[in-house]
Length: 252
Image 1 (cartoon, rainbow, N blue to C red):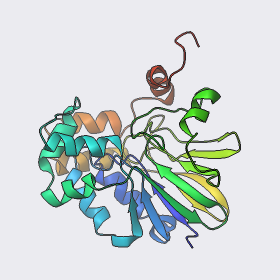
Image 2: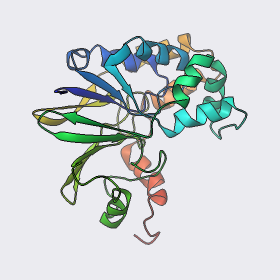
Image 3: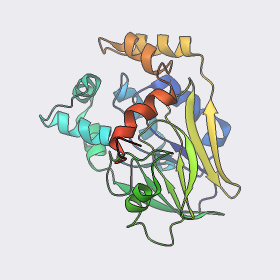
């Protein structure tokens, strides 16, 4: 039985942010660390994958859309995102194989909570958009195939932390470790007998950006870090952009 599970989503190849979260006592001592997708598509893909792989069985991996896109880019189907195409070219064959083998969902039994389904975007799709303010009908449709005994679903993808009820199911988004929307820091979650806790690890963003710039050969690493590690995009900005993709009427 697992009693303490840390959830890290959307690392996006930012090693300083990942290292800061892994140094948190509640992460280091967790029974399991679930890496909830979009691990490596960013400026330090090789280093991030190696750091997590080095933790061995303490890490459980879930596939994100950006992980799939890295594999596709490596196979000759480029991503529309420049950093993803660059990152795909940096990966070793064993790292590509790891990403290609990741599951869409993982269900784990956690003490005090019960069975928890982990997915990157939704249980049926690795890039479908659901937001904290998505209409209930959309949520019900997205979760329709989830087994009745699963009362907690943990997702990611939209880089904004929230906890909300959907018809007696608890839905958790831990936010993003490497590309937060809404404020700087590395966001993650802790699940266990006391329930769900949303956490934020404080970063010195100047140092983190300098480390990304110095540690990456991506040509636009400095600008990328300045935009995403510093969290230049607010949650309002992100919700406004993502809202058009969650099936709501344009008039709502």
